[in-house]
Length: 306
Length: 255
Image 1 (cartoon, rainbow over the protein chains, first blue to last red):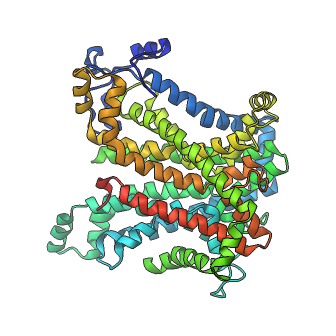
Image 2: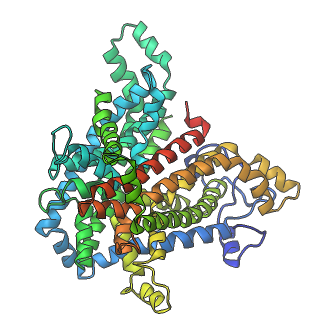
Image 3: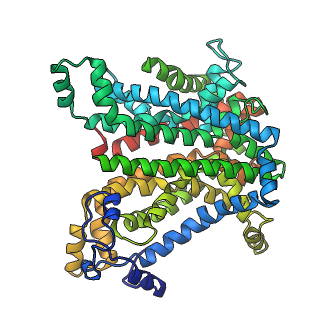
């Protein structure tokens, strides 16, 4: 795509303003960002290195057409009837009940994931259990499995025809279970690498100095994995807030009872209430944005502590 | 406790769904999958996933090179925007596309008038799929690109290699494994997309119905054999993708 040495006029203009690419490619993106552009001079550009011109143009166009303009349109249409219209749309009894359920269930799902995800990560890293690699692969299954199939699977086991004679279908428990299924890998996959990197000599030193396993965990292990636990929990929360497919079959989508925000938006689209759909969607987008910004801040904070 | 949690949440449901598929034996599964609607749904899903993954692979490589090898104003913002699709509800993706490319919207209306309807037809379904699997390739390639550094690329450039030649001979071989990993992740996501497709497709049986939509439609029409058989196809695709991605996962992540 960036096939020749040519650069468009606009691209070349951008290059003049931009700090030239540094020759140092090691270190994290954040490190390079923190160095600041003042350190680098225009002459630093290595031979053969081109500015971001054409590639940047392609990437921006692609993102605009597919992501930014459509999402912008959602926020725009949310205010079709002004601020009061927006407020009315998100405070109808159905909308406010669906938002409360979604936020409440997502917080609960985040917390359960924080606990169970860390436990599973511990199991995978520290316990020598047979079949560990199978288990390790299995953890990613909820990422690979289509959400509608996840919902169907849960309905088969915990639905009206449950072979275990245990049905949670069409209840709020079903909402939580469906969300737990699709968010399972997040905390495991963020905590696992940190546990692997952990220096065990510190733990051994603490133990030989008389620390109980409890003290070792709370004073040495927990502080190291806490940022990863928080990041995984935030991701799981964001995913739970936006989940749709897995809840469709097992929750029955009962208004005021089991209808999550995404299903509510879907129903509003189907009944041609686009403004109402866009208003609730804007609230969800806002929550996602806050989570992403918080994650970014968390990563920088954790990076600085290293 | 963790094992019991995994068993009841993950292993049991997926296991039983596969087992239930064969309640009436293998011929019933074949029969359910050979109906005209099922064959069309499978074909359509493969076509959509193919286009979406090809587009995102090209985009992903360009974006990754840009993020790792260049500095420009707004780089952090770009980085954040690429992650955005992970946090956006698929239904909102569908809504967003309908609002811009629907027949009633300015852009979509103009395109429809000129013989290129986007929503309720193939282009819209491809765009929706591109949206949801946008970050996969970028996120797989970026760490490897950072890891290998650009010494060799600089050496090649010093020796007179052009930009494209340097990319094809030096950069591409270095990121090959990570690229394949990202492509498999994107493919798995693309095959299984449901929410965004449900909104933009109009769910027309035999025309814009993908396999995930087929599962839902069959189940709600009390055709359990049809629903389970279609789900089996998706489970198999997911398991294959999982195993391939496992083998391809960049080495520093596998321990």
